[in-house]
Every structure is written in structure tokens, then in C-alpha cells.
Length: 222
Image (cartoon, rainbow, N blue to C red; front, side, top):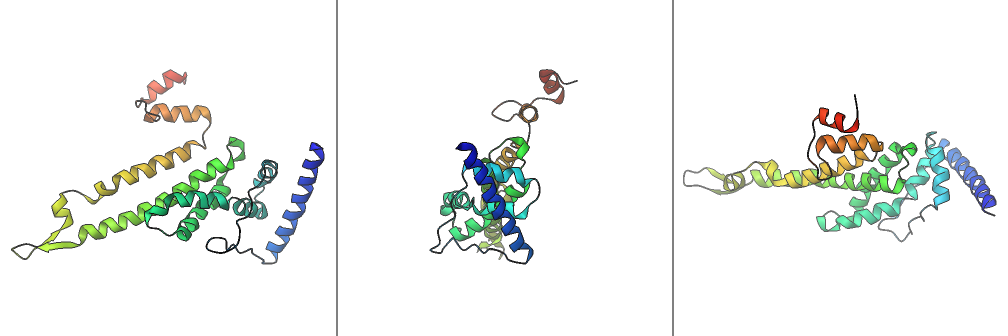
């Protein structure tokens, strides 16, 4: 029964993808209007469905990519809701997160044996964090340059004069957090050995930074 189910799944999805590819070739594009509407998000793929589609992802089939993106929109909404207290509307957050999902599907490497949801989650979150960082930087720059008052000599008193620091210090913490997230996402693309080299060389995971020679000696690299 299991073999029959998998065979039928393969046939069913093959037909669906062929049909979707034909529609795309004649200029048809599906429109998604889930956020802010009464439409329900499409259900996530089953494990067998995802495995089948991922085996065809490397062919560059746009129909496969479309299905993987649409069926993972629930993940985008889930992650976007974690940032609702940032002052950015949920629809905007979902739109930004969707860009991260598209990037994830376009760059996903099946050979790395990482779950698509794990990789996509990092891409979605990083896309939102980078957007928030850009917005935060713009707000900081405006507030820093805006005059607070005028001194006795008629000179404008700026916020930067009061704080006595550079703009970068204000949002450095957020910038560092985003950089860490980007680094973690990059590490997911490495093999275990490559990841270990990076962790030792740059002191990741709470360790001390090692020189290239120290790393080579520890791992037996000539």
C-alpha cells in the first residue's frame, strides 16, 4: 500500500506540474491574496510531497518553485507575526518575508540535507531583520540630525551633541544581531568540516578565535 501511495503521489504531482507549466507558458500567473483577506492559506506539503518536489527542484522547473513557495506561506506568516511589535504592519512583514522565502527556494541545495523549512526560516527572518535595520537606521539618522534647541549664540543644538556619540552606536546592537543571523544562515550551507573550521577560526559558539595555523593543527590540515 505504501508503494502504491507513493506511486500515485508521483503521478498526481507530475500531472499537476505539467499542467501548471503549460499555464505559465501561455502567460497565466496565479495571484495570491491570502493576507488581509478571507482566503485560507494553502496547506503545507506532506513529507512525501516535499521530498518529491525537492528532487525536481534542481531542474529549475518554475512550476516546482511556485508550489514550494505557495505551500510554505504559512511559515512566512508565522515568522512575520513575531515582529508585529516593531511598528511595521503584518501585511508588509509578510511581503518582506515572502521575498526571503523566494530567495530560499531559489538557493536551496538539496545535497546539503537540510530541511527546506529550516533553511527558509532563516532566510525569511533575515530578510525581515535587514528591512528593520534599514528602517531603524533611517529613523536614527533623522532624529540625530534634527535640532533640539538653539544655544545662546544662535547655534542649533543637535541630539548628537547631547549624546556625544556616533550614529552607528545607536543601532550597533541590532546590526550585530542581524550579522549573527546572516552568519548562522551561511553556516547552514557548509559541510560539517567546513562549519567546524569557521567556528574555530572566528570563535563562534562561544569559543576563542584561533589562528589559521592553530585551526590547521587541530584538524590535521597540511
